[in-house]
Each structure stands twice: as C-alpha cells, then as structure tokens.
Image 1 (spheres, protein in one colour):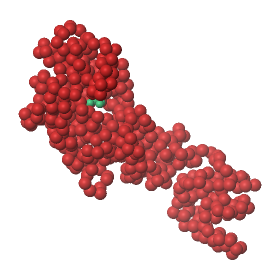
Image 2 (image 1 turned 180 degrees about the vertical axis):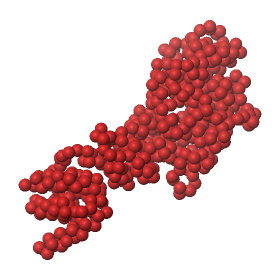
Image 3 (image 1 turned 90 degrees about the vertical axis):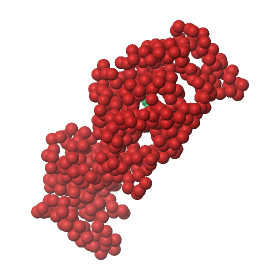
Length: 489
Ligand code: GLU
C-alpha cells in the first residue's frame, strides 16, 4: 500500500501550479481551479507557476496561450514563474521540454519499469471487446511487457496493488490498481503524454500541492505510481468538486458561455467573476457572499470546500455583477461602458455621459445591457409605436393634450436639472390628473408622466422623465415631445 506519509516532504516550500492546456479559450472551470490554487498559494506565502500543457500538438494553439494569459491578467491573478507572453520559447511550455521528458522515459525503460508496446489499435480494440463480452473491465493484457521491443508506444508497468492517498478535500482515497493495466505514457521518446509530463514537471518545478478538478481524481494513483518509479516525492493533493449546470448535469467544455473571454465581453466584471467562481465549491460558513480578492486570500480555506458538485447559477453571477457595478464610481463605470456605447458617445462631454450612466447604474446587471438601455440618447429620431404613448386607457386625444401640456410646462421651465424638473412635473402631473378626474376619470400622475417619458425615450421602461430631460437638455426634450405629438396627428 502506498501511504502518503512516507513521501511528503513537509519542509517543502509552498508552490502551486496553473497547468492549462491551450486547446481552446480559458474555460471557466479551469479559471476556477487556477483561482483556488492562487488563493491557497497567496495565503501561505507560496509561489505559483503557470505551466502551459501543450503536449497535444494538433489541438494546442498559441492564440489560446495568449487568451489564457490575457484573461488571467484581467481577473487579477498573477504568477511567479511562467510565460507572460505567448512567445515561442519558454521553459514553462511542455512542448519546449521534450529533451527533459526523454531522459526520464529512458530511465524508466532502462530500469524495466516501462516498455515499448507495438500492439495495433485494431488488436487492442479486439481484446477490449472480448473482455467486455466476458463481463471483465477492459484493461491492457500485458502482451508486450516482456518482449523487449525497441519501438512503439511506451507503456508504464502499473503494479497490481492498492494505492491510498490523502486528499485534502476528500480525506483518504483508495484505488485498486489491479483494475488499471499498464498505461501508455508516451507515443514515442519525443512525444510524452499527460500523465508523464505532469509527474516530471510537478517534481522538477517542486510543486508542493496539486489542486485540481475531481475529473483528475482517478489519474492521481497512476501519477503516484509514476512518482514512486522515478523516485520523486509525492505532492499533496486536493480535488475540487465538479461544476454542474443548473439542471445538475455535468458542465461541458463546449456548451454555452464557458470561456472566461465570453463573460468578459458580455460585460461581467472581474471582481464579480472571481467572487462567483470561488463560491463554486467554497462556502465561507456564514451568510456573507461578497468577497474581494484580498478578503478571499485571508478567508479562503480548503477545509470549507465541499465534495459534492457545485451548481452553476447564472442569476447569482448577475446579482454579484450588479453589486460590483453599483460599487463603481460613476466615472469608472463610464469608462467600462464606453466599449458598449455607439461611436458618437465618444464625442459627448464626459459629464453628460456620467449622467446617462448614473441614471442606469442601479439597474445594470452587466455592462453590455447599457447599449440597449441608453441607445435613445444617441439617436436623433426615435422609432416606436404611438400606442406606447398612452397610459392605461388614454385615447389619442388625451395623450396629445398631455404631451402639449408637458411641452408648455417644460418650455417655460427656468431650471432644467432633474431635481427641479421632478418638483415641477410631479406638481403639474397631480394637477393634470385631478383636472381630468373631475371629468369623471381617475386621477393618476401617469397621465402626464408616462406619455412624456415614452416620447423622450421611445421605450416601455427607462429612467425617469426628469433624468432623461436633464440629460437631453431643453431643446432636444421639446423636439422629442413634438415628434410624439406629430405621431398622434
Ligand atoms: N492540463 C490539465 C488540464 O487542463 C491539467 C491537469 C492537472 O492538473 O494535472 O486539465
């Protein structure tokens, strides 16, 4: 039995690794894993290594390396060692470390702990089907083990024994390796595969803790046996719970928005995404759900990471994002919203943009929503159905009277700031409602304020007419009311 106690070097410096494979944009699941590694390292004054696991030559692309780096920068996660640009040469890219892996492969071969295997995929498939038809778990039968072939794929001899290790989240975990069969660790001496490169790199990079997704749990005993065969120490393991869709199904790498860059482009803030990701598995044990990165560095603990799957709840992300948007100063929010506004916004005075954004700050859940909320500030003529102008059962004539009344009051208004306009219009709206009520109808301030607000915005829902009028200014406000009246004539 393999016990972790004998292998762990507790004197080791705390060093963690971020090992993404650049076969696509940075996935939110990988970003969560990296975040947990980062927090653990930071709170133990440890170090972090960004290691690009690009052994899959066909699927790995330099643009994805760049995306990984860009999105981690955006999230505010940094690292002590590893590439900072996706340049062609970096000792932290596995594709640049072939010679190193070859040395260790040769060592295993020389010590007869691994061997070349020339079984064809057809033969292997035939054996697999045969085993399955006999009700056996499929595993390699060891045909090439003692044949001394000098070429082929390289298989590592997996001893028939139980491997037990302590996982910081799952406690003691045991695997029966008798079920495994010898595993392929390289396609040839120059093409090592995942299990092998990870084991060699974790050792050479002196990684103390491996924190990764539960999907890697069954890889761990194989890697432990490789560590033993190579005479390496065993790092401490922690396997994070799986991420589940809201219907509890397993989250796919391809479904929906799973790339960090998608969240970034859709107007989520890095603070919100960090806060959201940490709650996918970690529970502070209190009601508190808002955590900044520095707070997390203090408060995070692996002990409070759950074993069961972490359900991905987009409403929670929207809630957190809304919170962080409201926390921004208006001027900071203007800058964040600019990419979502039309080109003409750039010519607008900053003060005016601040007013526009301020009018929507409280209801914004993601930055991209600003486009739709505020488009009417940037267009000359609005297009909307005249029916929208009527409040409840108001007829065209009544709506027209209402708009004419607003036009009169507003053209006489001395002050055009939202506070003065609100005082003025609310008073007038009450009087207008009472006047029509005396004709046997309901007194309702909406009779003045609704048609006005729709005439100014062209929308069912918007900021208040006072805020909009102040931002548009007197001239534009009156033009829009006139355009509304014209629709009714
Ligand atoms: N490159 C692997 C992945 O992206 C890392 C696995 C590991 O942490 O060992 O899943």
